[in-house]
Image (cartoon, rainbow, N blue to C red; front, side, top):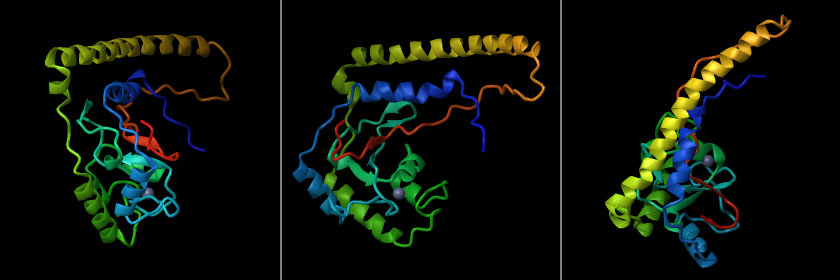
Length: 215
Ligand SMILES: [Zn+2]
């Protein structure tokens, strides 16, 4: 069994960013009829719903156009016209990538990597969905007003700075703990302390598939 690499405080940056984006973007809760209509465009019903990318059981609603890119909102929102049923592995693998490029990429767990046979058909259904949905990115900054917008993101900047500072502190605390532990008999256990690892991009653009998207 593999041990998980220790996380740093900075590994959580994308979760915090995601919270900041989710907290301000509009959500339009669909009616059942709208969910049925969206699924029909994808060639599915509520009974036959499956991951649009690979055909596995659907567990999530994936934002076809990601909500977050480069740590800022893309302007796309929570609405059924931007949500497609997906499985967890596809949702996580796609993350903030462009869906069309990702499907045919060699990314881990991408449909092409998984050798999905009817890829061309799935791409066609998704293109039909895009043409039906006609979603456009909102100019959130313009809508909010530049001043309110800047003030809002300054909160995130302050949190990130505090997290960086806390991480520096964490290294010192960890060193102190290790030093204290060294005085004990731990010959049976190799305790390793790795340095900070690169920020892990978490799943930012997912909704749990439970009936209908709620956020
Ligand atoms: Zn899938």
